[in-house]
Image (cartoon, rainbow, N blue to C red; front, side, top):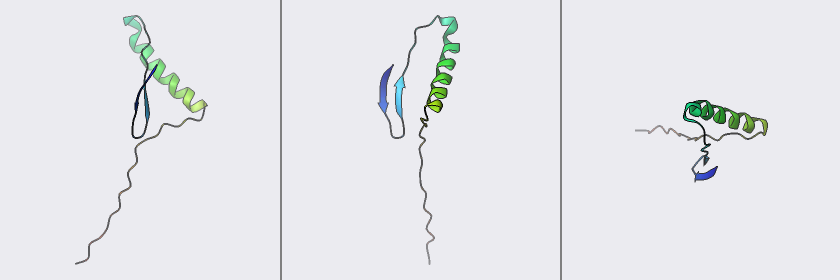
Length: 60
């Protein structure tokens, strides 16, 4: 696992396990699910981008 990027609303890691080609997609989805489940168990939330929009009415 390597730190790939410190992004605006996330910390991105690259994880590349070595598996047989026939197992690739099963491992890919299992790793993703297990990381999310572990984050939830440890109380780690995944940030998401937020934007505040303020509307002002122009008077004429």
